[in-house]
Structures are given as C-alpha cells and as structure tokens.
Length: 238
Image 1 (tube, rainbow, N blue to C red):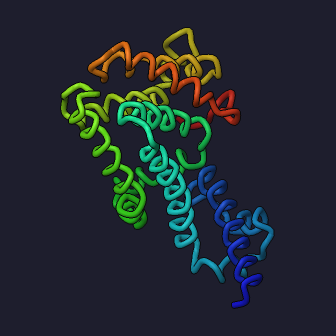
Image 2: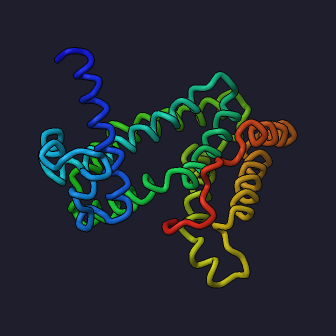
C-alpha cells in the first residue's frame, strides 16, 4: 500500500476507534450502535466492518487502544529523571487526574470489570498483560527502589501502592454516596481541586523518611502539574 494510502487508512481506523470509545463508554457493548459509530467516524458501515470483523472485535480494539494510551502515559511518568519519591507523587497525581480527564476510559473499564467478573470478557486478560502489567511492574520497582535508597519508608511496597492509588479510587467511587449523606459534592471542581492537593500533601508527609523533604516535593509536584483544564463540573460516572 502506498505511503499516503497507508496514512489515510490509519487515520480512518483512528477515527473509528475514537468514535467507538465514546459510544461504548456511554452505552456499553450491548447498547452501543455500530451505525452511530460509523456516523461519528464519517465512514459507512461496510468500511467499519472492513477494519473490524464485528462489534465485539471493535469493542476489544477500543479497549486496547484507550488502555494502551493510559498505560503509556503512566509509564512515561514512572521513567522521569527524578527521585523515586517524586516520581511516585507524580504518578499518583496523574492517576487522580486521569479520573478527571478520561471519563471514556473510566466508564469502559468499569463496564469491562463487570463483564470480567461475570465471565463474559475476552479482552481483560489481554489488556492486563499488554498494558497494565508493564505499568504495574515499573511502579512496584519504583517503590522498591525508593525504599532501598532510604528515601521512602520501609514498608510493604504493595501497601504503599494501595495508599497512593487506592485513596484516589475510593474518592471517586464513593462520591455519589458522599454527596447524599454529607453537605458536600466531591465532584464539584473546587472540591476535586482541594482533594488532589490534600492527597499529594498527605503522601509527602507519610511515605518519605524525611517528612520535610517530602512536603517540599509535594508542593513542587503540585506546582508543576496543575489541575487539567478539561475536568468536568459534574460527572455521570465515578
């Protein structure tokens, strides 16, 4: 295939995948319509099926596309040229911001986890192996490096990862209930901005052997990574 035709084919495939991510994240596999995906991608359905065998294949490709991009962005942070502790702070803050700016990914992964638990997922194991296992291995190695150097507290590395990322997950998953039982809306932009600051400041005070240095690093990381501009005022999913 000539280079120009190959480039156009890649562009067409990318448009289909991006349209599929939006459609599947909003309606799930069962409710998504291939006609709507084709229309959003500006192709006919015959061309859609030229690139993807069927709806299930398109769904799996959409999941792999978005998961690969998310994992790649995370790995880039984990491989920055700074201390393990600073990279862990940046990794945690990026994880929080992903919940703000990648609603399509979050919705798709939540749906796929439900399908996986029900034994209906053919994509989760592939995604875990190709995208998230390399990211997780790097993150765990990072924590172990920080503990070994004396920068981070000597604790079970898995527990440190739970402390860093688990708090983010719980914040968004519990947001609808917190809104019902408390006089706050955790998904309000001001509340999210406060939470992301507090989360990093807390880690700076708790995971570093030198708490003063940890506090300085937390402040520097927050200054270097402002809240995403595309954070939404209110989200449909946690």
